[in-house]
Length: 322
Ligand SMILES: C[S@@+](CC[C@H](N)C(=O)[O-])C[C@H]1O[C@@H](n2cnc3c(N)ncnc32)[C@H](O)[C@@H]1O
Image (cartoon, rainbow, N blue to C red; front, side):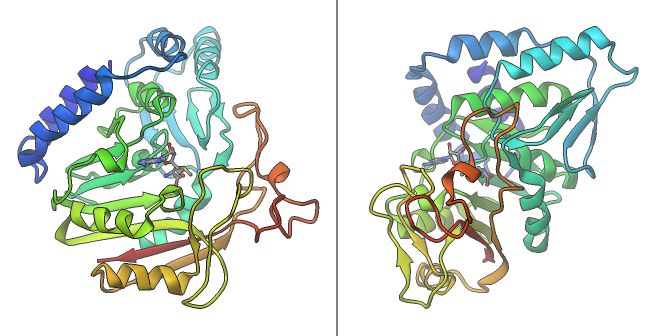
C-alpha cells in the first residue's frame, strides 16, 4: 500500500515544481518503506484492507469535522462496520472526522487550530503545499478545499499514515502522505509555495536547523506557516525543560515569541507576522472514546495553572513568514 501511494504521488507531481525531485523522493521513501519494522503494522493494514468498498463520498469542508457524506446514505450495517473498523485504528489524535454516521471524536478538536490558522492561511489555490508532521492529515483535508496543485504531508507515524489513507479512501481529496521525517527530506528543494510546520519545532533538538531546512524547502517567494509551543518572556527567554513537558518526553525548546521571531529573521525570513497566540485548553485536547489514554487534563495540575512538572501550561503561536 505504501508503495502504491508513493507511485500515485510521483505521478501527480509530474508537471509540478516538485517534478525535478521526484526520483530523489521516490528513492528516499522506498528506503524508508523497505525498512519498516513496526509490530502493529499487520493489524492496522488488515483494518485498512477491510474497510467497505463504497462509491466516493462528498466532502463538506465547512463543518468542524472533515465530513464525508454518501448518496445514497449508508445502511445501518455498513455504518456499524465502518465504525468498528475505524476504531481498530485507535488512538485517533487529530480530528474530528465524520464518515457517514461515524463521528471520529479524536483527542484534539483540530478544528479549533484550523480556525486560528485561517488568520494566517496563504493562497493555496494552484500551489504546491507541504505539511510537515501532518499527523493523520486532518489539516491536509481542510486545505484540499482550496484546490492546491500538489498537496503533500509527511508523517513518520505509520498509524497516522494509515488513518489518513482510511479517510482518504472515502474523502478523495487528492492529498498524499508519505512516511518521512523532515530530516529525510532533501535539502534545497526550493520548490514548495507553502510549507506548514505545526507542532514539530519543539520536538527538534536543533530548532534553528529545523527552520533552515524549512526555508530550503520553500520556493524563493514561498511562505512558511509555523506553529509551536512558546512561553511568555522577552527575546532572551526560552524554556528547555530538563525532563518531560506536560508528560511529553521529546520536548526540547519552548522559546518566547520574540526569541522565535529572532530565529526566523536570523535564518533570513522577512515579513514575520504573528497571527495568533492561544493557550491550549482541556476543551481542545482531551481523552475520548477514540483516544482512551490520558490527555491534557491529566498533564496539568488541578487548577490548570501549571503542567504536572511545574512548567507554564501549553501556549502556542502561529506565525507566517516569507
Ligand atoms: C504534535 S503533533 C502535530 C500534528 C499536526 N501537525 C498538528 O499540528 O496538529 C507532531 C507530529 O509531528 C510528527 N513528527 C515528529 N517528529 C517529526 C519529524 N522529525 N519530522 C516530521 N514529523 C515529525 C509526529 O509523529 C506527530 O504526528
